[in-house]
Length: 210
Picture 1 (spheres, rainbow, N blue to C red):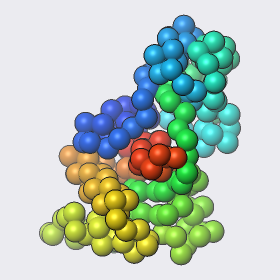
Picture 2 (picture 1 turned 180 degrees about the vertical axis):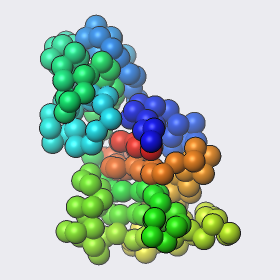
Picture 3 (picture 1 turned 60 degrees about the horizontal axis):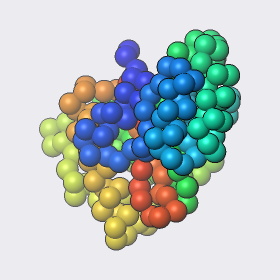
Picture 4 (picture 1 turned 45 degrees about the vertical axis):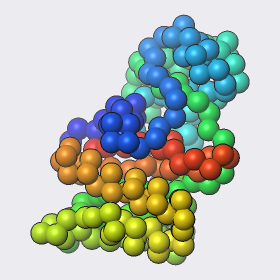
């Protein structure tokens, strides 16, 4: 199974019109400082390794200025993180988070169908949400003979209680994830978290494609 790095998955998202934070992948502390200077605001530095749970394990750090970004990059690049050597970091704008949501598609092996999943709680593993907050998750199997359409995405997101602009945008993102899932023959695709920023923009803060 091929899993894309976060920065690669985000490049795919961008191609399909899903907003991502401003940023670039770097492989040296100097590059980290240069990207932070270009962004011109506090940044997040995220180790690019093919494992989950980076935030809890110290794989995501924040810097308030370019010098701090360079300093943090020195401590991360070349280190081993959860058994993987860190050779690249994603340096991107630190988002002002108001809410965190979840959108994704996976394969339900028992049903032999794709399943769309959305949640009004994001930022933790979907398995954790399913156990702790099952009322905040909605799912829908995709009939392979029919496919998945924008109105289906809308119906699903509406079940979470969203309306107006946010309903339209989340539905659009979910439909775009379906298109990526099919085009890339993926087994799993998710935005977790999908962040609603302080200025009411929806941005894919993290990206995963297997």
